[in-house]
Length: 248
Image 1: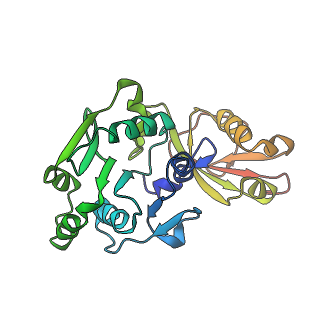
Image 2: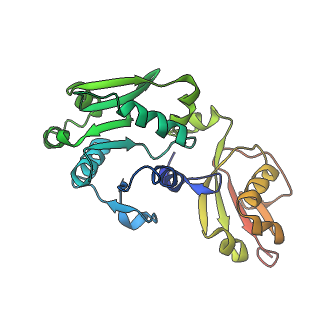
Image 3: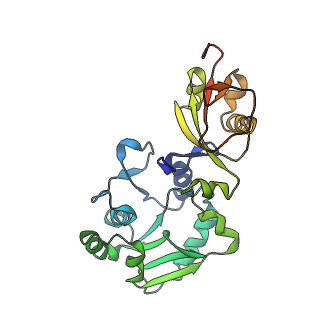
């Protein structure tokens, strides 16, 4: 996708903030594995002890710093993640006996939607030291339980790794640049935004729905540096939002 997926906006919020809001009602111990200087979230952000070693290093960071025995590991790029999924996962956790991992399967195994026990920390450290960075290998080498995800929850774990993933839902990602009063309302000078519409007018409606103050402002919109009233959008278009005095 060419950007930090956790910071992409969907329905008016960054993906990471949407997830934090939902899981915070279930746990007092939320950890983001990532770079502190690029993350604005209010929960604790812990940089990986062994950076640049992929998801396995993030799992190690979570296990090492967790307060509780079971750690729910979640990818940060699931736009439709919701509380129904969390409730189902918690129910499944109560069925675990001797297993040390429990992951979700929906056509394939999803290693970044599942529970990992803190007793795995030495195993994970060994894999990292040997540069064997496969989460699949870790799971297959432990006592694992695999849960088949109910059909009605399958969209909740869909991620946005590529434009094709977005296209499966009829969505696209665009870049938004905001100037003057518009920037003050949105709170960001620029952002990557997943739009569920097809046109510039669809995008404007989305923005006004999620930032209602925009309805009180007059502004123009430019697509790829050209002012237009409306047109169909394409993946990765750049849309500038400018108050009347901007752009001449």
